[in-house]
Image (cartoon, rainbow, N blue to C red):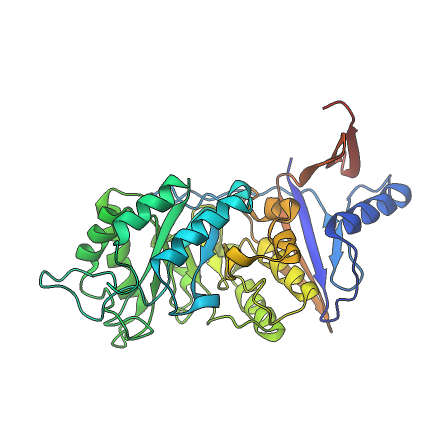
Length: 387
């Protein structure tokens, strides 16, 4: 059975009810008032709370040949919080924290190193070199450590002459060599940026790295970061597993919402194997309120965006951990049907986004398991007391 969810939000979030409470309240109202309705609805409103569910037939598209990205990737990236202030100890500690906080068990698996990890110049053989002062053990040893935690290691390069920080070389013209290097280190994810690109179209610069990664024989998730400059949603699904549809996000409400709006345009192009990417999460970095971060995480989940944590997970406060650990919201993002939410209505500060999905959630509370599902198009609670 396939369901359809709608999220409705406004710029003024004043409701403190949990998402579960909103959902339960909304469904109870519908059960009492609309039990005979032929089309059930579940609305989520950023001011008042709520959801809309509707049955709908959908078809998933074929997966990319590398078999990765069946659902949007989940993990962590160093840039939003640390920028260039990274070193191997931070990466190891982050991998440890991903496990100890329970985030790994929820599906967060990638530990992604962003810009500034390498030396300014290649070695005498033309190879990229990890920066000796910050990554003295090398990337192979770091990947081995991350893998022992049951996690995956991601790295960063650029489809240009230099990376965006201008502190290390890009991979333009070195795609085969660099892809082999990444594979030999045990890399599982590549974020590929767009700086210093010689004004060459990304449609020309990104496919060579895609082919080079495929030629290594190692499954490496390929994340295109060309900022939506040439509408990658229209062509990148045959090149990579995700593609940036926007410029960089900032830890501000207006920035977050604007990225969501820009990303929405391309909803129909996303699906298993290839995802629209409105940039990484800012949840927990301090620039927004708890309510705004809750909206941020919820909207990214509805948009089937990559859930890449951007804060310091070694120092999670209870509220941030709770937001990032919301199993019901994660379940929406990771729904295997993989259809991105699409804005269908906008009135002043209210917007309605809808998408079909396969299942919502089953939640254990004390000695009870509460599941929400549709029966004859009517939302119902199913409560099991014997576990």
